[in-house]
Every structure is written in C-alpha cells, then in structure tokens.
Length: 384
Ligand SMILES: *Cc1c(COP(=O)(O)O)cnc(C)c1O
Image 1 (cartoon, rainbow, N blue to C red):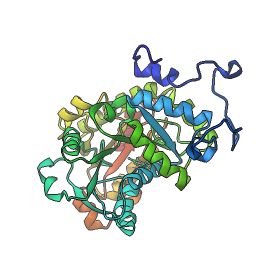
Image 2 (cartoon, rainbow, N blue to C red):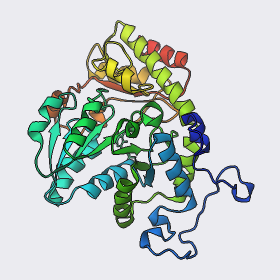
Image 3 (cartoon, helix red, strand yellow):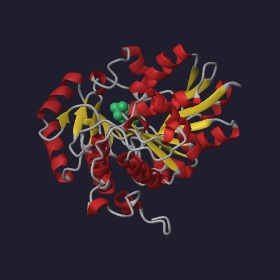
C-alpha cells in the first residue's frame, strides 16, 4: 500500500490489513485475549495488552485511520469523549491556558468549562469566525487551540485556515473535532492541523451500535496521547474494534449517500413554504458556503431547520414522520431527528440558548442512507 497513494475508497478497504492473511481469513478475526506472550519488549507501553490498545485488532485500525487521514499515526479510544478529554489532558498541565471555540459539542464544552479548571487549566472561548479577536485572548501560557469542523446544530464552519496559521505563529497545538465531516469529507491533517479527533460512534462506525473514538496526527504528538491513555485506561474493547473496522470499510459509500441525501432534503426544506430557515453549509445561502466548498468534499448528513409555528408544532411534525427515529446522535444508516432544546442542548439555560441562536422550535436531522426520494416524500407529508 505504501508504494502508490491510492484513493481513500481503496484505502478504507485495504490500508492497514495484514500482509499475510491470518489462516487465510479475509476479515480480521477478533483477538479476544487480554494478554500476549512476552516478545522481548523493553518498554511498558510496548507490552501487548488490551488496555495498551495494541492488539492486532487495534493495530489494523491505527494504520487504516492514519492512512485515510493522511497522517503518520492514530490511536483508538473507548469513546469520542475519551479521545477528546485524553488529547486535551495530554497537552495541558496545571497553569496552562486553552483557546476553544465558543459553541462546542456539549460534553467537550462541559469538560473545558468545568473539569479542566479543577486541574488548574484555564480557558477562553473564541469566535471561530473572527480571527482578529483571537490575539487579545492569547496568554504566555496558552498551549492549545481547539475547534470543531462544523458546529452543532447550526452547522457553522469556522475559519479553519486561520486556525492553522494562528497555531503555527503562536506555537500552539491545533486540535479539531472532525466528527461531523469524517475523513471522507475533510482531512484536517493534510491542511496543517496537528491532531484530528473523532467520535467513531458516528460516521466511522456508521451503524449506531458501538461507542468509540480516535486521535489522528503526527507520530510524536499521538505518542503523548497514547501514554496518557495507557494510564487513564480508556481503551477500545477488541469486539468494538472489530465492529469499527467492519464499519469503516463502507465509510465512503455511506458518506456519499448521506451527503447527497442531506443536500436533497435541505433543498426541499428551503423550498417549502412552511419552513422559515434551513441551516446546511451545502446550500448557497449558508454564510460559509464558499468556505465549505473550498475545504470539504461534502457537507455531511446533519442539517437543522425552523418551521413556522411554535415548539409544539415542531413536535407534532416530528410525530407525523414515518422514517426518522426520534433519537440523538448521527452518522448511522438510519435517519435520526431531534429538537436540540430537549436533547443535546437541554443543559443550557434559555439565555445561553438564545445567545447561541438555538430556538425552541429548531429541528435537527441526521440523515441516514435511505433513498432521498423517500425521505423528501416523508417530510413533505409531515409538513402538510
Ligand atoms: C458524539 C460526539 C462527541 C462525543 O462522542 P462519544 O463517542 O459519544 O463519546 C464528540 N464530538 C462530537 C462533534 C460528537 O458529535
């Protein structure tokens, strides 16, 4: 695989696979063994043990993830939050300071705002679309800048090129949560980010049946995360590795369908008289449409919209839909729908939600791989 750089579709299937098939097995078997016979390793971190994330099931995933992301190295973790919290803890010590985007995934926001301060790590939130305002928040002890590829649920796209430039100029480690794009739609490492983090629970696994995460980046930086993780113990179980591995082989096919489904649904909703506002970076009237076109190969499966009427009207519309399942999360094969005020953003006060632009009637859809015509027909019926 190393000789010619093949397309990501090919690498998803073949990269990292054993060169000699084990007993001829086309699908890598599950190595359900906690420990492995001693092979002369002289470092604790090299002993083969499930908690050290280095069984054959882990190693194939690490090589495949690094290959599809255009990176040197990768590590899988027990969940997306394990990837995020471990990566932040690996580069932030007591006395350090962090710059983080102001509308983060809920779990990350809470970790930065409530957990890190208890360990002596300070932070400032930044507006991802106002790079001129970042310098004023920089401190001599700032170590990390942290952003997300697209925000939830309004799908804003920060000035990601400016983030890379700012990190380089100020000697910061740049981290991006790339869950909403997946490596098929966007590869931050190729653009210059130091670390790309994913909740593999979403697109990478793609079947809503495990939680998992990963950290991808330059070798030396990933090693720092690995050492942290070996001590925190948030490793991925071999059976979950197997399911993630299986899911990843079809990632490109699923992403293509989900990108197309989201465009079709967003265009339909934007044209419907009962819909006031649609948020999707693949629509020409989205404020960062040009940036998304420049950086991404697709805008993913998540969109949000507001229909005329109040929150009750929104709930009644959701009840009338036949295909979408009312559940949080995204990236699986089935379409999911939520009202963020009752799910992902229920922890925010009404004032905080207003400041973030999240209204009570906002509906979020994470499309699956169903036929676009069927999804559009279902929403047409639901909207009445
Ligand atoms: C789901 C999600 C996470 C957390 O991932 P888990 O696998 O649930 O721990 C982090 N960031 C984003 C953007 C997510 O969507």
